[in-house]
Each structure stands twice: as structure tokens, then as C-alpha cells.
Amino acid sequence: MDEMFSDRIKDVPKSFIREILKVSINPSIISFAGGLPNRELFPEKEIKDATAKVFESCGKSLLQYSNSEGLIELRQWIADRYKKRKNIDVSPENILITNGGQQGLDLLGKTLVNAGDGVIMEEPGYLGAIQSFSIYQPNFFPVTVHDTGMDLEQLNSLHLDKSVKLMYTVPNFQNPSGITYDEANRKGIMACAEKNDFFVIEDDPYGELRFHGEDAPSFYSLNPEKTVMLGSFSKIVAPGLRLGWIVAPEALNQKLLVAKQASDLHTCNFTQSILHRFLCDYDLDEHIAKIRKAYGSQCRAMLNSIEKYFPDGVSNTRPEGGMFLWGRLPGQMSSMDLFNEAVKENVVFVPGDPFYTTVKKRSDFRLNFSCVDEATAEEGIKRLAKAIEKMM
Ligand SMILES: Cc1ncc(COP(=O)(O)O)c(C=O)c1O
Image (cartoon, rainbow, N blue to C red; front, side, top):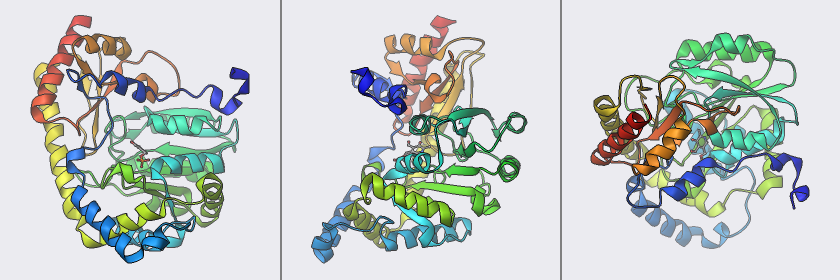
């Protein structure tokens, strides 16, 4: 059967997280593995009301085919929010509505990457982006991410030729590490993009989930012609709607539109209208404030337990927002081995390996705090500490 598959799909790994989620179905297991927003915070009633309203007012037209760019009112709402939140000017004409941020990644791969082209990848990096770009058979250039952003020395020492098309970054509360790039780091990255002529992909699904500290300027505000912004309603409203967007310079936007047409004609007309009704009728800022407050205290609870229970030598990031933090075991200890030990203690997390483009036994790991309350976080961290101690 293998000979039937295309070269582009053959070596792309299955999502490791989906495999872990199978283990965590067991109710006695505490899971820090998922990457899900907290379902208790979904605006369920408000979405239900918005659905009834749009169906009543324009039922038949919502069931018809629609345009590939996406609902103009929703694109205008997104442009207005960029102005309000970041004081940046984005034309709705340059916004393409996508089936979640994930489709944005696929469309960018399809539009920019020939087999063998260079893709600079923050490392560790979002495994969904690694998977998505891998389909287009790029040559990955991994660059390490430290506490304040990408390692600029490493970046500037790469041999970057014309085949390098893009750099992928999650500069705010990165998935998986929770790290945020500071302003100087962003400027250094943009200088490299300008010098070597590649696009910086600014994937920002967590940017609004800041629980302390101040925002650094967006790459887009440094140079809009070199930046592609990816956005998503998954973490601020609900992921099941599958709604996100891309903001790209005009010429690229036109090609992305062709790729979108070829992929699925358009994003669901019905959910776009429901979301737009919801955004008009309710105060999104108030809703996001609730999410920030909840995730902020869940993150603090996890950090407090880590301080209390983890043995000396284990280090971790202290995120200012988002849904994840990143731990590192001492020396050469493998987080994959720790995973096997942790399952025996009824706790799971994601080992570092799938967040890298190069295969190696990593000592780091991701912990998700958005779906566990204080008591569960404490119990889970206690169990994990026990598994680490056993391995030491
Ligand atoms: C960094 C990042 N980008 C993109 C996505 C895809 O999200 P969605 O397609 O739901 O917008 C995720 C999902 O977890 C993510 O963490």
C-alpha cells in the first residue's frame, strides 16, 4: 500500500498529541497534555442566541455558497480590532477568513514553499506548524528560542539564501514554551528578514490572553510588507467554530485566495455570521477578561505547586499569558522516559520531542494549565514530581 502514497505525505508524522489524548481518556489520569481552551468559559448561551437570531433574519442565504475571502462584516470587525488594540492599520481587503489558524499555515505552505525551500522555525515550535509545513517538504532551519525570544546570534549565523521563504514564530506566550519575544528581539528578527528577504509569520492565537506585563510591538508594526499575521477565534471565543484569519501583503493575499479556493471554496458561511452576530451583541473584552483572570490564577497555582514539589535541578518558564509553561529536566534526562514513568503515577504531559524538527531525546516538556483547577494542578504536579524523583 505504501507505494500509493505521495512523497509529501509519506514521512509526515501523526500528531503525537492525539496519541497522548487516547491515554488521558482514563478518568484517574490527570492531564497537563491537552492544548484545549477551558470549555467552562465558552460563551455557550450567547452563541446559541446569536445562532437563533441569524437564522431567523437570513436563514436561506446562510445555507447558500459564499465568497472565498470571507464575510466582509467579519473582516471589517477584525480590522477595527487591530486598530483598537494595537493601533495598526489593516485593510479588510487584506484579510482572508480561514478555517482556523491551522488552515492559514497550510495555505502559506501551499503558496510559498516548493520542495527544498527554506523555512526558519522557532525551536521548540508549535507542532501543528511543523506538521503543516512538512507536507510541502521544506528544508527546516531551526533556531532556538530563549526566555526573551529567538537566539539572534544563531539566526544571523545561518546561511540564508534565496530559497528561504519564511520564518515561523509565535511571539506571544508561545506554544509550547509560554515564552514572549521582547521588543529588541523582534527588531533583530525583522532586520534579518529585511536583509534576507523572507516573510515573518506572526502566529498570534494567544496574544489577547495576557495576565500580566505589557505587549511588545507586533512584527506587522515594524514592517507590514514583510509580515503575515495569523489570527484565531479559537482561544478567545471557541475552537469548534473553526474560524481564523490571515493578514498578508496584497500580492501574497491574492495567491492565498487562489489556494483557499482550491482547498475548500470558502469557510462556513453560517458560523461566520453567527460569530459576527455574537461579536456585535456582546462585549468581547469582558469575555476575554474572564478568560485571562481564570488562566492567570490557574498558571499561578501550577507555578506555586512546581516550586513546592519539583526536585532541585528542574527549571521552568514563567509565562505572562497563554495556556502553557515549559519545564526542563536536569542533564540528559529524557522527557519521553519521564512520560512513561508519569503514566504509572496517573499524570500525563507532552514530552519535548514533537516540538522539534530534528529527532533527538529531549529533556524538556510542556505543561498545559488552562484546563486544570488549583487542587488538580497541585495533585498532578505532586505526582509528576514523584515520577521525576524516581528517575533521578
Ligand atoms: C500556535 C498555534 N497556532 C495555530 C493553532 C491552530 O488553532 P486554530 O486552527 O484552532 O485557530 C494553534 C492551536 O493550538 C496554536 O497553538
